[in-house]
Image: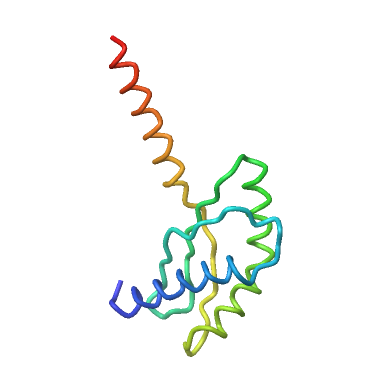
Length: 117
């Protein structure tokens, strides 16, 4: 990725996070974290990697909310950033935070069981 696309990706990540926190009224969207954004070289598409916390039902509801709010988020993003055309937002699941939390939990369990012996 070029320096320009990296800067645009960082700007998009920050703005989408702000939009989700302040402007999105969809109650289905729960605790959502934007982990990264990858932008194509022509800046036409932005792949937004999202980590959603909660149980399976909460995740489903949040995904439905995100999908239905995509056009709203995209138009709000277009008003906030100065680009020739606003990139098409494509949300993708990123479960790395969840996997990391599980690994830490297992390591802590191993540590505890090691101290008992």
